[in-house]
Image (tube, rainbow, N blue to C red):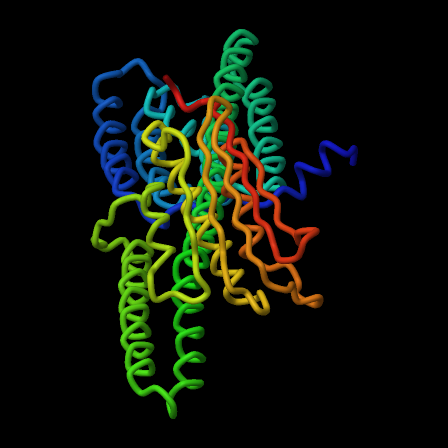
Length: 374
């Protein structure tokens, strides 16, 4: 076999697979059973019309399994029809025979590659036998071949369209899962890190300062409550249930990172016209800053201050998050940095993270104004 033929021979069945039963097929079978004898009654000039009406009505049941067994159903219809035609010396001239095209369409729409090749060969063989054993003219054969080719092409086209659509849906599902994973990491991880820090602080002062321990426990309770709320919202989205609505984070929400009781201290500085920043850009900046602050608290050693600086100017928006701690030499890059870089890239910008020459860690993001609108 040549390469194209071998590739077609090895082609699998259509994906996604067909439904096992469609009510339209049952309606079509009922229509054939009614129309075939009615046409035989109204066309007395057709030879062997009652025999062909019975044959066509009996073969109509193949339509019920044309999707799940396309080659077998087409083979049954062709073999029986050709055998009867050879026996009586006449082709079926009833218009009801047109439903055979539905079987041919199903072959190229649902069958495997070898099924399409074998079925096409059977159709070609039946055409040759019809030409040599009856009074069929060459023009009729050419017209029949043209109709068969058009029917098969339609099946192949819709098969390809369904495959492309299924691939697009799968890519959309993958992108949605990546987005959910990014949001889960950026939101829940932030609160869990705060819980861990407060728990460590509370364990250090439990014997010396019970009031501070109680305050740490209240903070842990608040963070845990917020974490559960956001987790329920995400699970609700995944289960297609109504999730509680919450406003999209804005640049002003960056001040929530600088809670008075948070340690280490977080200082937020907003410069420029923050109201001109579109909500998708502001939400991305908030998540990047939130993740940067979380990483500084979680991985930085000896961090006493974290500075969050946001500047909006004619070129776009620039974000810088700096801490004054010591970077752990063995800390591998995780999903947080990757998520920050992906958020910036989706908006046509870039995000970088690394140690500062003077010590500590810096996260920077630059988002261009291109596409923000007037």
